[in-house]
Structure formats: C-alpha cells, structure tokens
Length: 222
Ligand SMILES: [Zn+2]
Image 1 (cartoon, rainbow, N blue to C red):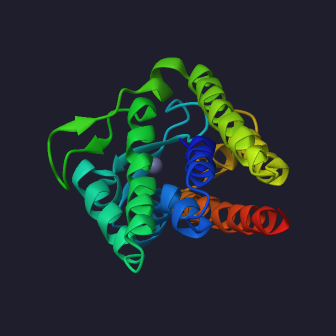
Image 2: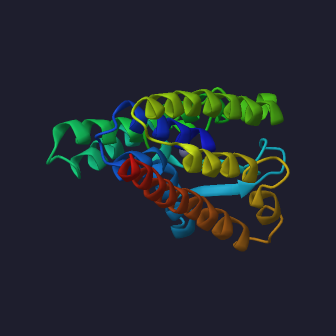
C-alpha cells in the first residue's frame, strides 16, 4: 500500500488535531522508509517481477526486519518512545506506525513474516489476486479516509485542499501506468534493487515532509 498509508495519517491527524503532524505522517510510512534503506543496504531482498501486482513490479523476498509483525510492534514502540515527553503523542505516533502493517496485510502477497526469519507469513495478497483492482480499492480506501479528514478539519475551519492534492498525485503516480517501479524493474541487477530501494525510501520521506508542512500551514491559517 502507498497513498493509503498517507490517507490513514491525514485521518489520524484530523481525529487528533493537537498532535504534531510529523510523528503521525512520518510514522505511517516508517516501515517503508526503513524498507527502502534496508534494500539499498542489502539487509532486505527484493526481485523484479512485472507480474507481482498493480504498481510495485517487485517481489518482496525478505523484508522481515521492517515488515514482520514482531518488528512492526517493536518499531511502533521505538517511534513512540521518541515522543514520550507527551504520552498521548507517543501513543498516537506508535499507532500510526502500526497502522502501516495492518494496512499492508490485505494487499501484500504473503511476504509479511511473523518475526524475522519465521516460516509463518501473512498477507491476503490482493495485489496478486486483483491486480489493478487492488490499486482501485486502495484509492477508494484513501478517498473515504480523506473525506473524513476533510470534514473533520472543516468543522474546525481548517482546509485540507493541498494535502488532498498531494494524496491524489501520489495515488496516480504509483499507478499501473505511471509507476517508476515498472522502469526500474527492467534494470540489470544490482541497479534494479538499488533504484527500487532508493525510490521506496524517497517515496515515503518526501511526501511525509511535504504533507507535514502543508498540514501545519493549514493549521496555522485557521
Ligand atoms: Zn509497507
């Protein structure tokens, strides 16, 4: 899942508007930010596969240090600990990180381990089962969350237009037609997995910072 994670972040922020945006909007993508870095470092293993799903075009062979259930719990607690000065913020930041694993579960093709190197794997596999349909479902999911954030923010006189524009751009950019992963998957190795890792990391870091800035700006304007 991609744009859906940021939609969850915008919804959490709208539900808890006094929580700073960064712990939430960086939190929802933290597992994938680490995933990208770990792929570049060779800790995670991915392989190009143009049939793997609607927009990723890579099989995730080993992502256990960021996307196993146990590590999702651990990383949620670690991220929350950064904000322990306010226990409420810490709890919301941790929940934002864990939301990533829950949202990934329906789409991932059985590549989510229980714990690092476990035989047991989870993931309902909508990417593989539905292909483009899973991308459309993710869009619907994101739209519902965005509508909630929009109305909740509007009640406080806060606009959501620019975060919504970014979300739509992200959704369209990682689509079956525009996904840069389709180009990268045709590279020779090791360029393919290195470029994939770099794109995953940047694809979560940059939108998290941009959305944080836009959400904070809208809050200041109210
Ligand atoms: Zn993920």
